[in-house]
Length: 569
Image (cartoon, rainbow, N blue to C red):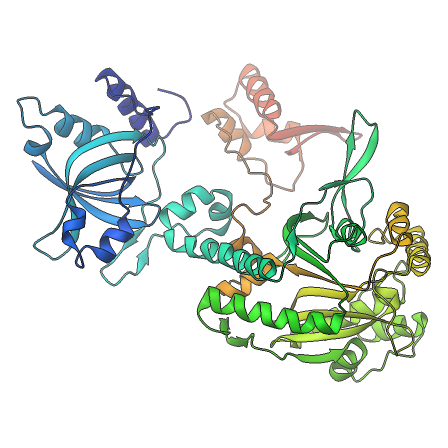
């Protein structure tokens, strides 16, 4: 048997060999055509029993109840679970009972994929089931699934609930916790509803580069890479804004894109370094028009996803039916802090931040300081959909100057349940103004702001050819899905969230275990003192064991002026 495999894994590999010895290929190449699904059978059999006289379906064995010459088993396909019934003498009408007695009873396990052919019937206890006349092994599972127990009321016991394991092994999570599939089904519905709404308006879905020579369109730290053939740096996009605006310059009236964005920043319950954003740009519109469009779109999304414009999110009921409340950036800060920052200088705002205990640093300009106050004191209060409008010009280098208010831009962000889910502008289309503002961003970068925007000369050149009045919008799809599915962490709505490297279990011999137990994490020990505790060890045993542990990267030896010290690596 292979070293490092559990007893269950060893037994399953032995079953694999025995299946092949019987002439059964556990991983057949040919297609297995199905004509029925569990959910459809359970929902419609009583309506029309004649439609299910011959069914073929495939799925994973999830439970087994073997009763001698007959067995009941639960089969799970992509739509749900259904009970199947197997009878030895019907599966094996001749003298040879190997298919049932050996293959099904002894060599198949929970987790294996099989295909079954048979007819639907109702058991004496009233459960809709499939009477199997043929079955075929489709895939042998070499690792046992976690056994999740459910009682008659549907309560779950011994569930696969550890978040780190669930996110790291989503393939196991969605197998044994199939209810979580609804989150991702609703995620697809959110995106498809928005796409359908945009398409019906005549706007076109497009694709723009993910690898970009300049990280523009947002204030964020990028992931950097290098293209060997061109011998030039490239960045994973932090936004697709500047490329979509180029298409407005090119003459399209409306373009949108659902795409992955990448920001080399922190991770928490609402941030993942890779996330999905939808950005849309419509010519001859402004941010006031965009507010009405967002309200109409999100109400449709809520109804399509949850059946109502009012969505339950934690303890709150969020109403996505417009119109939404509107507050300017300055009004919102004054409302929740009693401080009017509208006429304050950068230095005065910094003083206020310090008085409120908001952590700041010297790289932050006036706009960043205002944003810090807003994030610390205002955001959490914005539960119902609320537009925060009219931002200071320093905060938004890509938005058009406000038509009436000096020092502001025509921008809004939509906040729901204390988090921003949408950002929109009346887009800046004055190329001279745009270049000056990007130059101001370069000054912030020189001060050490690693989120400042870079200069994009080609984008400025595109504006010089003329871009019509345009309104643009970005929506964070992951956060929107969190709202529509009542989830509190972004990891729950991503199939494969970013995770720290998995800690591998390292096998140790009894001697290695004994030595390792003497070294506490975070402590250093004189090598001679540790060796002295192992009074029955020979020098050879000590040297061999120490060398093995340092070679495996478990322990390390460091030389100092005071001697050799041993610690965990």
